[in-house]
Image 1 (spheres, one colour):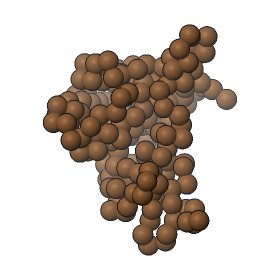
Image 2 (cartoon, helix red, strand yellow; image 1 turned 30 degrees about the vertical axis):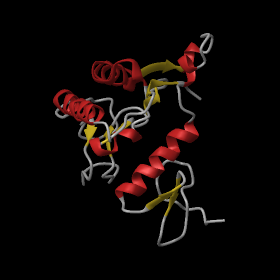
Image 3 (cartoon, helix red, strand yellow; image 1 turned 180 degrees about the horizontal axis):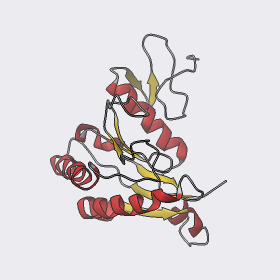
Length: 189
């Protein structure tokens, strides 16, 4: 058992707001300029690349929805500014041999987010459990909300529907199972 840290974007960005969408695209551009050619020998890829881009056939995830940081627990950000409202959290475990290397990336991306989104960016760390405001140690969103947003984003990117916040796979009739993988393996009730 370890501890997590990261930041939440609250309130959510709105892709219908041109300023939010432009700020998110600039944020993505900042990420690319800083990390696209970065390598980390402690990362999760054999080649040491820090970023895995959408659809990267050489990566661990074949996913068009996210840009993954291949450190710690693979923190990720939505890759499309049109879906900026699905950027709720950027976090990872930061304890232990495989995940300790993630914290500098979390902090670096946090600074970029603060520059682009200002007061919407809220840093949290599970070791802040004595803070007066419990959002300083657990974040603004529950993990259920974070995983549901991930399921919804993946479904939207795959051309599936979203019904009242529940991902629905029209082929199987399944709904999102809340684990963030967007597979929707549970049958409809």
